[in-house]
Length: 196
Image (cartoon, rainbow, N blue to C red; front, side, top):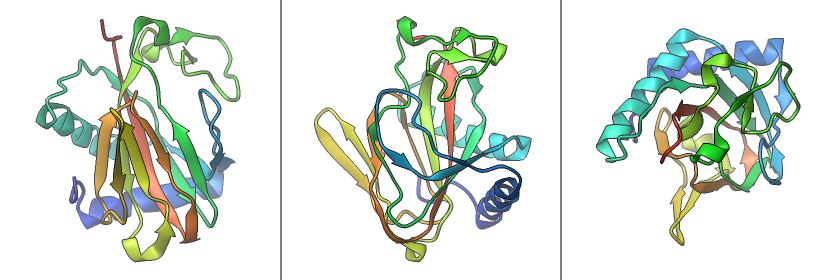
């Protein structure tokens, strides 16, 4: 979706992300099977940001023909990749009943994908992932989003500012190493009941 967000909307997300980075930033951790990751993340708990990304996911869910039963998104992750930053091949979650989140009383670091401290996510699985590009293509080199689906690699090099890619959370994907500059993105996972 090359123009998923208007410039003002994209600017707003970047401003929120930069504010939150000053309050709390952490090293990106992979929540699942082993995959090297080098990035900084913070979490955006802003209803406007969540709504913007929700609308992108709802539209893609219908236009792509997935028509997944979607219930609730997770908190938006604001991610910054700098030189040599990357996220190796991984998935964001499985969609069967074995992947359903179980409620636990305390958070673990990293938190396994099938556990949650949020009662609203209990019993659900990640179904769709969305990543919004928050950097202009000339701001960085490398950092390409690549998806691997049915043996075919799909690359999204130099996406426009405010563009979005939505894909099923079980699709293997990665961010290639940053050669120079800074790549920023907003990521959200939409949950629903396990696929039968």
